[in-house]
Length: 124
Length: 319
Image (cartoon, rainbow over all chains, first blue to last red; front, side, top):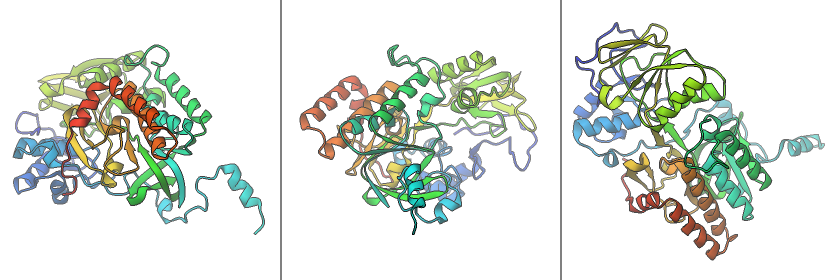
């Protein structure tokens, strides 16, 4: 884990951009300090850290942060990446427009546009 | 709900090759890719691929050839189509524009590729900090050079490739940073975007910082389907376990390419071919002898990788 410590010069912190800390999870704005605290109080897998801090719960579903969380578990608690595990994968794994979930399933999703057009032209 | 014989998720070199192999064996194949154009990494890389011979080592030309072969083989190519879930009984959740539907496939080949690994550092969330593939997409798909002076964080072939790409586009790499040596001694500065990077006390004016931190397999759909997975540093992290036919622990689900472990394009193509033929053989479209020959050809071509895949054992994936 890359701790900030005193090695990195501190610059002015703003609310949206805490530049004096390392953001581990950008989606949920979780820093290395917060991940470290979760491990300190007993988190032993990446899922533990996720439940404790929300890291990995954002729009990218952990793509960005999971390797860094596993690394922190190794450095701070001696946990191997295999033991740290992957984040549980849950749908949707990609961003979706709400309409895609709320809409009706098409009759024949794999029909070509030409077939679709032909069907729509038929009466009834 | 719609049913197909073979669904391939991912239209990069592994997915396209798998779709071609399965379709030429007589299977009805649909290929889904979340991007608007097919080719995966071949869309945004331009440097010659050293692992392939001169007939196929130029990524854009290779992409065009594979897409043409897939179309000629009768593959139902569906770019702009997102597979966002994979459930029991090989049911994929698919979104195409504003429509969402379930797709039941007798065989599924996951060729979902990889994602960029980050290098966290102070100021690393400023606009202007981007991964190597982000700038390759900007340069080669959108034709945008996002600055004049660049810092590149990372060592190895990926950092070298992106450095050459930046130079070829007219940019200048003013400093290269080894994250293993300087990761904790690195600071990006700027108000509404990167203006400078300070490394070991030395300050460089830059417009953008490129992070070439390596890649990790994107195994989310396989994990969601509860395929067993193992950990191997050489493969880039936690990956689905596979048998000699590249079949996961769940019957009817195969995994090929970067999504099964980081690899080069030649390996992705070798795995795509075997996965496509294995899926066709499972459907009864291919003789045991033909599949056996394909299996030997694969393990001879990528001996080291096959040995790592064989040695994997399952880790806990639901905790």
